[in-house]
Image (cartoon, rainbow, N blue to C red; front, side, top):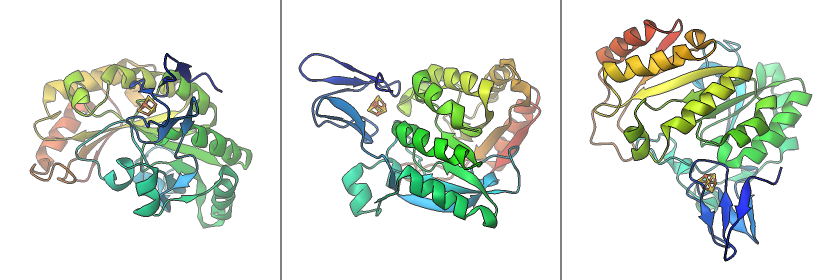
Length: 291
Ligand code: SF4
């Protein structure tokens, strides 16, 4: 597919991969640091550049209701289209290619090599590949190419995403993805704006993804930002309104201070349980995390 960018005047090109619609001059990188204008085309600068690779329990993604007890070969690159000040993977999500190579030691793994590694790990209980750690969809071409090979090998694909990619990108990868965990960071637009995102884009992404694949959602409760009972009422009510939404698992997790939020307190455990109780009025499968 080559329609996910448009040419504008003076050699600038607009990237359509996510809601930012970055308009890039020749050589310029987008907000995500993973895509750039190269010779008049938007290219995926992190294609195959792997910063992290581990055989993880599926519950760590987190996925509770998709092949429980299994392991999944989890791969990450660099770059992200959000700027969350509490990101636990900021060493890889907030850097571009040079830093990923020099500081984090990113190495190239072709889709073929990664799919072969997944197959080689099958005897250890591996079910396939999870695209995770940074935001995988700023490099959606690698997800698509690898996931296709993984499916051909008879294995599964998991995507852990912030759900901020465009619906065109979602359609590209959806045929190959078996399960997703999508961050729903809160349910108010001003909070999403602070993080550099857009709530409506994420809602559209969740609604479409859940039509064709197993979706679980995660909301990290950050004190003073998205921690009101009213907001959780709204969020859980909206999830329940989707087709099959009352069954959709929701993980409500506890924040710990890190990266640029070291001045905040960890979320009160009782508050996490109270918000989970609120969500349970609408949803059948609510899980708490980090408590
Ligand atoms: S994917 Fe990156 S370059 Fe493309 S619009 Fe989003 S932030 Fe900008």
